Image: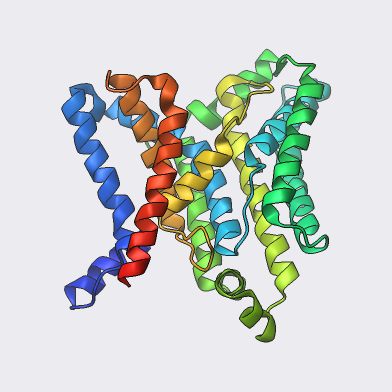
Length: 332
C-alpha cells in the first residue's frame, strides 16, 4: 500500500501517477461496489472478514512469488509444494504423539525447513543446472504432487491427535484485537518482504537481475546467489502459508493446493509486478490476492456465474491483467 500512497502524493505535486500502482486498488474498490449491488450481505463484517482471512494462503505464497518474478523467474510448483509440506508436517505431528506446545513448535519448524529446502532445490536446479525456471518448476510440481499422493496413499493425511488439533486451531480461527490471525500473518510477511525488497541491497539486486541480467552481471551482482535466494524465499513463504492452512482443515490430500500456482501468479500480476521481471510490488500483490478471493466470493453470493467456474474466471483475470500491463507499458 505504501507505493500506492507514494504515487498519489506524487500526483498531487504534478507528476503523473503510475497506473500500475493504482490499478489494483481501483479494481478492488470497483469489485466491492459490484458485490454490494449484487448482494447487500456482501459488505457485512463477517463476510469481509471471511474473505480476507481465506485470502491469507495465496497472499503469503504470492509474496514469495513476487521475489521470484521480479528476479525474472517463475515457480509453478508452489501448490504441489504446499500439499507436500502440509502432508509431511501432519505426519511429523502424528509421529510425535504429543499434544504439547513443544511438539507443535517442532512441527512448524519442520514445515518451514521443508519449504525452504524445496525452494532451494528449485533455485539450485535453475542456477547450477542452467535450466529454464518454467521447465524446472513444472518438473518439481509433478514430483511434489506425486510425493503427497504416495504419502496419502491416494487418500487423506489427517492430524489424528484431537488435543493437538484443538491447540492448533487458533492459528487459523483465532484473532488478536479482533483481527484474524491469518490476516496478521500475511500483513507481517508483507511488511518484512517490503523491507527486504525495497530497503536492502539484496532487494535491489533482485530487481537488477530481473531488469537486465547481463548488466547486473557486469555490475558485480552475484547472479546465481540472488536467483537461488528468491526461490528460497518462495519456499519459506509456502511453509508459512502451510502453518496457517493446516489448522483450518487439519488434513492434507492429493488435491491440496491445486491451482494455487495460478492464483499466486495472478495475484502478483494483478498487483502490478511485470511478469517479465524488473519490478516488484509487495502490497500490490496483497491487494491482488484479496481481489481473487473477492471475485470468488461474489460468484458464490450471486447467480451471475457458477462458482464451479472460479478457475476459468481466474485464468481470464490473469490474461486481462497482462493485456492491461501491456497497454500501460506502451503508454509510458
